[in-house]
Image 1 (cartoon, rainbow, N blue to C red):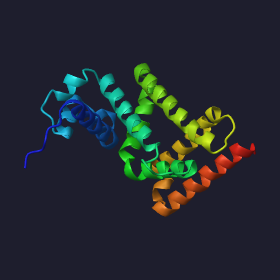
Image 2 (cartoon, rainbow, N blue to C red; image 1 turned 90 degrees about the vertical axis):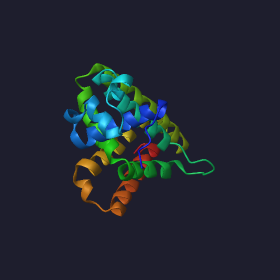
Image 3 (cartoon, rainbow, N blue to C red; image 1 turned 90 degrees about the horizontal axis):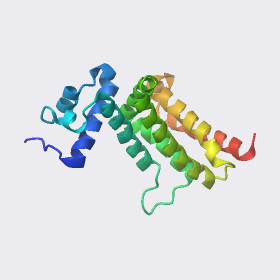
Image 4 (cartoon, rainbow, N blue to C red; image 1 turned 30 degrees about the horizontal axis):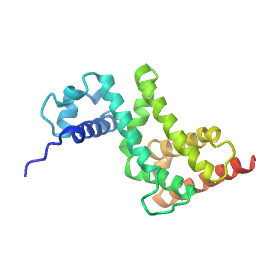
Length: 195
């Protein structure tokens, strides 16, 4: 059976997905236009047709992960998920279901310290995610939710980093979820009460 070659937006998503996987598994040195074509099962030259430069390819990775992150911050249609449960669920789910995204994100964040264009894309993505997080915090009764979104996002990111690159990788899924729940609950309660 021949693999179906995606077209249009699907092809661009396939390119970004393949690039993210390569960054996660081979590092930035393993990310080339040719390697992305091979990983995505696309004809040679496909990646460079859509994304001419390396910076464009790196930015496409950031934007693709942002799209998935935003989707993970919304409640499924017809379900009423409390904001705290949504925050715990998205943290645990991201670590479980998208470890390539996390590893690639950390690689790209370090690269962005030397690439202003990439830094701008990461900063914009972070701004959008913190705005969504502020809405959840507002629903939890946290005062100044926009200000509180930064430390909450930083703590959640720390938990995710430890899960994929630190000692947290040794925890069972149950222990990781319990730790995330305890940490998020304590931080939210502290932000609500000012203690």
